[in-house]
Amino acid sequence: MTAFDVMERRIWDGQADAYARTAARLCVRTVPALLDAAEVGAGTRLLDVGCGTGNVTAAAVARGAFVRAVDAEPGMVAATRRAAPGAEVRTGTLPQLPYADGEFDAVVANFVLNHVGRPLDALVEMRRVIRPGGRIAVTIWQLPGAPGQALVGRAAQAAGLTRPDWLATVDEERNFARTPDGVAALLTAAGLGDARGETHAWEHRADPEDWWAGPAAGIGAVGGMVTSAGPDGVAAAKREYDVLCGEFLADDGLLSLPHVAVLGQGRV
Image (cartoon, rainbow, N blue to C red; front, side, top):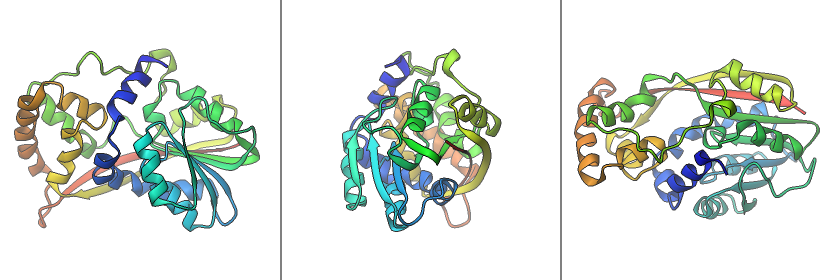
């Protein structure tokens, strides 16, 4: 594993419940478009890579697909099994999937390439398990991101927190542009045809305290930054967060947070 992969394991260890209460409610927004891009319907043999707490898997099962799912974090595997009893769910890590060549009609990965240290190798492995003519669809967060994506990071910086040394980044030679063109180029490099990327923008609605709960629990790289200085640092960042939330509060007291994702798709 790369240093980035090691960091990701550390960040997400034991975080399935916290993720389900917070960021999973954001990431579910792209699920219908993701499944449509992969042409998932009744009878589709689908692999959901990085299944998290099971939103994609459950939605695909509801479409009548035959779904298998895999995630690196055992708590996520358990959560997906609860969310989608009809799916076979395993523990596994990219870029080595525990499946045979050409086993699936389609593979999807919802906000997974954000979390791997070797994105191209991950896509090549996903391509390996798809039959000829099958489809792959992935989502990532676009960079630069929308204002809602930066709220917690701004609060941490305003509190004087800095990114700790253990929060690694993807090696420059393995990274790619987090844009529609960048995703399309990565899919093409992985050997996929008809590769393309498109943006999906929306405003995520959340209670301010619920939205804070994720990073305060250490979820994601920004959560690692928020919690890096202990309880005092978390409290300082929360004070800044409460102020900055005023930019996004709607009349009903909920946050309205602009987000932009990139959906990439291609054919084997």
